[in-house]
Image (cartoon, rainbow, N blue to C red; front, side, top):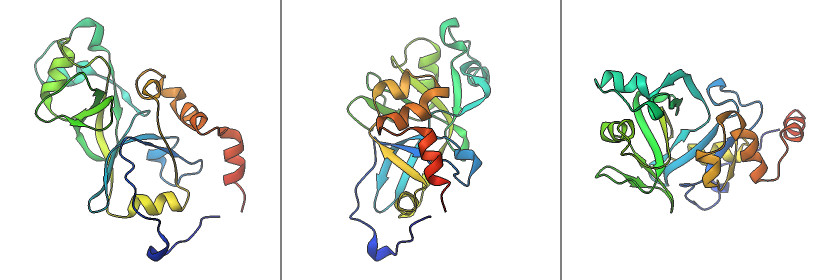
Length: 197
């Protein structure tokens, strides 16, 4: 059963930037089923923005983007998969990456992870000059002021501090279970809990 809270009962604001959201079983939006979302920014005034890191974009690869840029990527990165970062700005690319790459538009999110959303990083990745690790998404997920906090309080999401490996090295098909494991949660037991009235 979902907990209902009034605005007066919301806890003090705490930014979730650099953390992950883990979709609870039975989420009522199929676009976020078993989603793991890396939160890139979160302020009390402007809300939150994050990228789903485990939903592949229908077998689209880096080659599909570079073709539009009239650029031939190096063979070892040409088949790098693209992901659906969320339903907002779906035609725009966002790159979550290791902090060894910097441009004027790069935003550092945590000690080891940054975000860049320009064509330059796509070109650099294609030519072998990009960051050591990167994840390219089409679109993003966003929440208006107070929306994410309310969703968390009503058990739509669990939150966790991710490992670097979870974001860049664990196969996307295993990321949801691996994210739950960070909290010591077994998916089967979680499904049983959420199934109770």
